[in-house]
Image 1 (cartoon, rainbow, N blue to C red):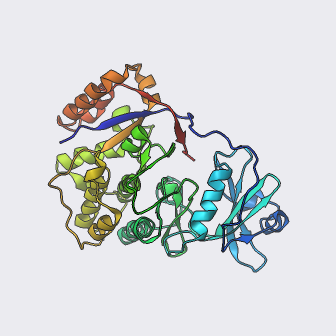
Image 2 (cartoon, rainbow, N blue to C red):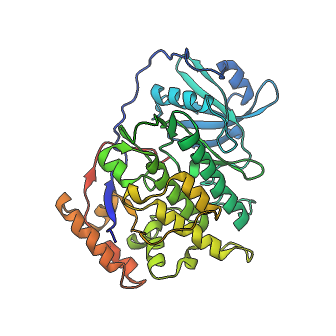
Image 3 (cartoon, one colour):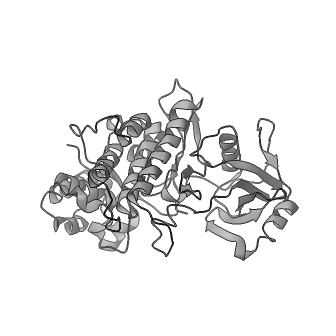
Length: 391
């Protein structure tokens, strides 16, 4: 079996520079309504804080009512937004040309002066990050059936992007905060600002690395080559989060217990995967199916992208139409934050990373207490030119 792969993510370092103000060409964009800034200002009550439903590094999202009484989610990019003109145009071009029940629908946009605004369908139940993983109080009951349907719905959306749409689309930022839920808790993939189009005759695209720590495939970060298997890796992490009800990284825990992938692999090797299933699930949970979903998550996050299944195969496994082949299951690839090394004062060099990986694998075979020992057996290496989209 392979060792864990390590990269240490430097928060705040970015390969992307802020785009300067440029003319935006809409000549090749169809099916998009152009809203005036005044119209959207009225729709949101002058962008009232009472109507704000989300906020991040890109800016703010407001709930608004359009002139035809349609509710909308109005995404206002701030002047300091990490999403520049290029990403803004990408999001419009990609999502305006396709339609699927598990993809968020774009109504239109506004471009006036330095205002850049996207207008999406309004989804009543926000994102998985804010509801299932947010830790706050909400009235949504995430039963096993609901979680199962969310996993399958996201998989269907990715199969559509990867296999049906021409040219194929790599999302590049699959994560809990980009999975929105409608009033029936049906999932919809959102935020296509980082999406890449990949023709059928290409296996990968070389590009600046972009994505979110915890969901980023290691080989993508190392070689800057993005493939559809990069999305598969991110989906695998998301799958484990949905089943466990836990975020992929929890920095409030001791260093050795922070990473969901590390814990999932240990429980898999020790035959205790049932312990990964969310304790808040009711008695009607199908434990056998939940464990199968966890194993699929591990298959998706294997270090070698060649070993990861395609999203169409993942969907078939989730539906029970294809067996989960554990015969060649290998350890996940994992990316750590460079700040972890600073906490222990253990920063060493690039040459020591491989030895640290081996130490982690050896310690992982010694029992549950060894999970805490992980903190004492790693080195760090810096990897610049990563665009952190943690919001």
